[in-house]
Image (cartoon, rainbow, N blue to C red; front, side, top):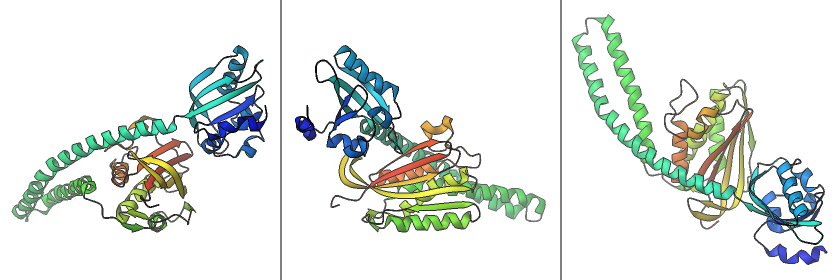
Length: 350
């Protein structure tokens, strides 16, 4: 069969490709090119198995289908193209001739399904967190004023005993610190003020802050797509999002390492149950030790931190601000490479 005989497959939304037992590619449809981010000409330079680092499950699926002259299904197969993130697909392999020589591979990407499920879970988690934080903050805030007032009155009573004033000073300072903490807990609940924002101005502001605080061993590399349109967003909240993530990264690296600020356009993405033609893909990448395994599932929960001196609010606030903008935030972390990815819609007219 010639490539022209497969022309009908080019119209499918489902990614499909046709291979020999050896993995030599005969046909790749446009949907598969989009999924893998590789043109058919580049794909055909290597066998299917070479392209995916001799994935045993993939080779086994093709060989089983051809050996038994019947369809073979893998419900969750991880594929790792060169230089790209892993892709999770549901795979169906079907022989298309007799005797079986060629196999048709249908790939159903499940990453988006997983992302939607995770987004739903994060939204429910955030709603619960928000109510918990708001109630807790108000319960803490009410007695704090009384504690500070009582400490001031006590200072007047013991003004002639300077050795005791040190203790009332500790009471006032700690009460003030708790007041600031409560204010930060309540801050996300104010409505954000949207204006046209250049994301690169936001990143440059954060870059300047971090380099001023860690001037010696910190390197911050820019990787910007300067053609991106402006966002309708709250500039101060976006600065806080990037600063919170960036500070966490720099502190994890103990002020010494490399941070990458990367912007790209994402096309045809679903965010907060809405489909957007264009979205901002902002990535903040560091080469630090990675997020500890034991807190990865709960890293966006309030008061969860991997540092003894941390408050565990930075990522919680970042997630709240991103969700208020109709976006998503997620991360991938391993030693030497932690990447936080923020997706934000440009707007309905983009």
